Length: 258
Ligand code: HEM
Image (cartoon, rainbow, N blue to C red; front, side, top):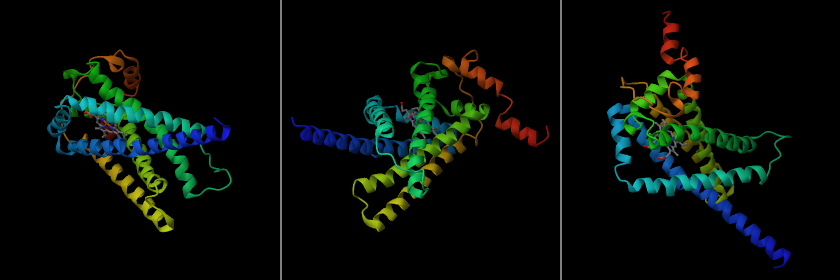
C-alpha cells in the first residue's frame, strides 16, 4: 500500500470513528438521559411513586441486557474516544481572542470531565451498591437518596453540578451534532441549531433539578447502607461524618437561631 493510500485509509477510519462518537452521544446516551431524568421526576409525587417507577424499570430482566448494550458500551466508547479527541484532536487557538464559540469549545471539555466524575460516583452509589448488596433490601429507593441529600451536603451539591454538566454537555452536543452532520447549514441554520441546543440544555436542567427538589419535599423512611466504602467505619463515610454538622437541617437551624 502506498503512503498516500495508507493515509487516506487512516483519515477515513478516523472520520468514521468520529461519526460514531457523535452518534452514540446523541442516540443511545442522549435518549437514555431524557428517559432517565423523566422517570426520576416521579420524586415530585413522593417516595412510593419513585420506588415503583424504579421497580418498573427492572421488572423485565431483559432491561439489564439493554442497559449494557445501549448505555454502558456506548458510554465507554464515547468516553475513551472523547479523551483521545481532546488529547490529540484539533486544537483551537483560544489564547488570543475570546468568543462564544471558543467558550463553548472549552466548556464542552470541562463539562465532560465533570460528568465523568459525577457518573463515577453516581454509578458507584446506585448500580455498584445494588449489585454488591451493600444497601438494605438490595434496592435504590427514595429513602436512600433523600437520606444522602439531607445528611451529606456533598451529595446534593454533587447532583446539582452533575446535572448542570450533563445538561450543558448534551445540549451543546445536540447543537454541534446538527452542524457536523449537515442538518443545520448556512448562517440561519446554525443560529437555529444554537437556539435548539440552548432550549434543550435548559429543558434537561429543569428536568434534573426538579427530580432533586423532589427528594426535599416528603417525609421518608431512610434506607440503610449495609456495606462497602460508605459504611460507618468506611473511608468515605468517615469523611462525611466530619462534615455532619453542615446539613441542610443544621443550616436551617442556624438561621432560626436554634
Ligand atoms: C436526580 C437525579 C438522578 C437520579 C435520582 C438518578 C437515579 C438513578 C438510579 C436509581 C439508578 C439505578 C439504576 C436505575 O434504576 O436506573 C441510576 C443509574 C444511572 N444513572 Fe442516574 N439518576 C440521576 C441523574 C443522572 C444523570 C444526570 C445521569 C447522566 C448524566 C445519570 C446516569 C445514570 C447511569 C449511566 C446509570 C447506570 C445505569 C444502570 O446501571 O442502570 N443519572 N440513576
